[in-house]
Amino acid sequence: MTRIVETPVLIVGAGPVGLGLALDLGTRGIACTVVEMTDGVIVQPKIGLMAIRTMEIFRRWGIDESVRNAGFPRDYKLSMVFCTSLSGHLLDREDYPSLDGMETPEWSTDKKQRCPQIWLNPIMQAAVEKKASVQLKMRCKLESFEQFDDHVASHVIDMNQDEKFIIQSKYVVACDGIGSSVRNSLGIEMQGNPKLSYSISILVRLPGLLNFIDKGQAERYIFVGPEGTWGNWTVINGTDLWRMTILGTEEKLDLKTFNAEQWVQRGLGREDIHFEVLSILPWRRSELIAESYGCKRVILAGDAAHTMSPTGGMGMNTGMGDAFDLGWKIDAVLKGWGGPNLLDSYEVERRPVAIRNAKFSTHNWNAWLSAKNCTHLLEDTAEAAQLRTEIGSQLKQATKADWESWGLQMGYVYEGSDICVSDGSAATPDDYIRYVPSTRPGGRAPHAWLPDGRSTLDLFGNGFVLLCFEQVQSLVVSTLKEVASMLGIPLSVAHIHSKEIANIYECPLVLVRPDGHVCWRGKQIEDAQWLLKTISGH
Image 1 (cartoon, rainbow, N blue to C red):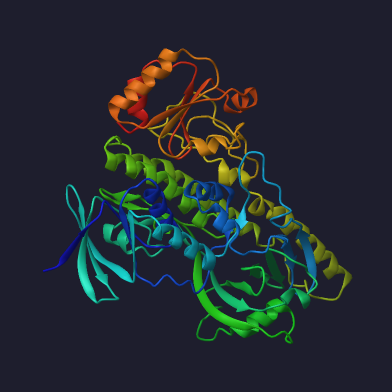
Image 2 (cartoon, rainbow, N blue to C red; image 1 turned 90 degrees about the vertical axis):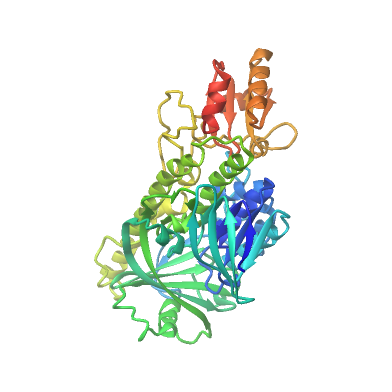
């Protein structure tokens, strides 16, 4: 007889997004099971940049310090260099400081962080394993699933024991990547551009590289040749690991004839530097969004729902936002206070963010391509020298938004969400570079330091929070709390006596969701029951 395992939530895939959702649910005390078909070892680290909003989310999950101290050198400068090769002509550079030299922006508790996936996954996995309510099952593959009115039956094979069993859950969340078998089983199509370009990534071990070249420390070196932009060289761990990415076509980069060593030597610009090729990974750059984020009790998140060019580093960071949005909603529904419309709001809120971020990432990718004819770029003439200067200047200016996308990372607003009550205010300008904090419903509640040393962000997470910035009638607050108690909705009240923070929050009363997004603001609560039912999905 087939063994049956019961769990409220089954998460398929133990990449950063799947582990992130498990962490969020585990932090809330919700039992869940994560199945991962591999052993979890990362051969080719695809992820390196932790965006500021992701670091804020990690702060909520208690892993921000582990990520910050994972090992990336804090004095390594994160500049951007445009060149013909590491030993060739310098076209231009955008100088940026190291992590220690970088200022934390006034609108956040955190700054961006570099943490390659070879470190990130083990950190997240260790944190998940400490959650008593979470079961992590490696080398367990989902083979099929069936949906019923009140549960999903998932057929899983444990490849360690060669055993087939069934996991019964209220919900299944597919975090199983670009080729998601769950999404394919649901028949959900991906919409957009499946092939912006074809690339091959080469993981290289090369200790002491910076002693051999004159370009200095950089987060990324972008290579331009007679054919235009042809590749890039990216720091992985800040010491001996690097990733070289070759750009081209599937025909040009045929794996049968692909010579990784020759490409690495072209990137180095010389043949006398010893290096070791550790792995080779072909991949397609795409801009694809799932036409739907799920069906009934099966939900898509991360790369299973959206893919985008890595230019800008928003792929995993967008997926982490998915997990943060979805976790509290699943928690609310399973605990009984989330209404029938709450989980529907996940797609309404997150799909437009993915479309926005993917579009921006494609814009960044196009900015990497020189607008000028580069045929004579390497020639030893005054005209070629002038061309190199012009191309470097153009690329530096065109790619600036790629490296300084604060508005993109922080400024997304859940427009049109049924669980955010619009106050009729004008939309916040969606500037990809500049971030302007606002409490307009749907946006991230602003950060400000409280007198006790905490951030306002630390107030959010376990339920709704009503922030009061002026003396309000006690009856208003007590009525809201009484109605919340009657409906079983977790609600706390924070009285903040700071004119500075009050100015940032813009209204006397601001109601914030468990994920730190504003769901209502105003001067007076007219109908507490209607308000609470709306923001909880009833």
